[in-house]
Amino acid sequence: MDRRRHLDDWRPGASLETLRARARLLARIRAFFAARGVLEVETPLAGISFGTDPAIEPLRTRFTGPGHARGLDLYLQSSPEFFMKRLLAAGSGPIWQLGKAFRNGEAGPRHNPEFTLLEWYRPGFDDAALMDEVAALVCAALEQDLPVEHCAYAALFRTHLGIDPLEADAEGLRDCALAHDVLGAEGLVLDRDGWLDLLMSTLIEPLLGRDGLTFVTDYPASQASLARLAPDGRTAARFELYWQGMELANGFHELSDATEQAQRFEQENCRRRSAGQAPMPVDDALLAALEHGLPDCAGVALGIDRLLMCQLGLDDIDQVLAFSLARL
Image (cartoon, rainbow, N blue to C red; front, side, top):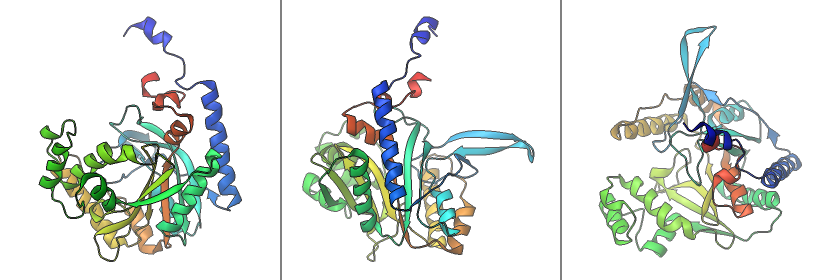
């Protein structure tokens, strides 16, 4: 390493004015939930289990000490969701949390392996009611009155790409990517959801939220993650929020059936094995909490760093963090 260059790189990525803007943003978020009587909570950053989503890889650490002389593998959490659902099942009522989350293998203009996540859960809300509150939160946090629109996932694909994402197979989706000259598509081998994600992120997402907040709704059932399915079984009660072409939030009308959740964990671990990824340990405590009884609720996670990027018109996450991965 060039020691002189290293010593010149001690400065933060975010300017002092940006750090002040972040502090004001966080203060308005806290005021928003205080006014609505939602309880702020804290849950562990490290756990003995991790989500099974094949799109997310964990950062790991290891504890050695009393009770674990041989060591205990721990996973830095990509979301506080599982711990917060255990609180909900224990009768917490509406709760929110603001803290750090972690993902391995993600670094770039919109990604840092450590990032700030706002997550909250509303018993008695469905996904539609929660979208209204997400819009209210964002407008209050930004002190802007932004217009809001809702677009169904399938309608976006039909409008912009001329295909039905609920019917098209992997080959048809690959053909669509090639027809639209998606960079690198010719050499990729993806499953159906992989092609859907590629088409969404490269061809549709940049068009969303240009005139205000855009909620994308009714995702395919294969991308339900932790959301309930619609009665027809084809779509999920899941939404994502976009602003200025950037994904900011992901929310669900939460699945509360322990048996179905366990099946989804196993299906996702099967997908991980098929892709050459290590399966993740299943969170048995979450399943026990669901078995005990999760209240009917909706929940959402919102990326604070990206929200601040959009607010300030910045195009690199390094510009809103004191010290990103590149400055450690």
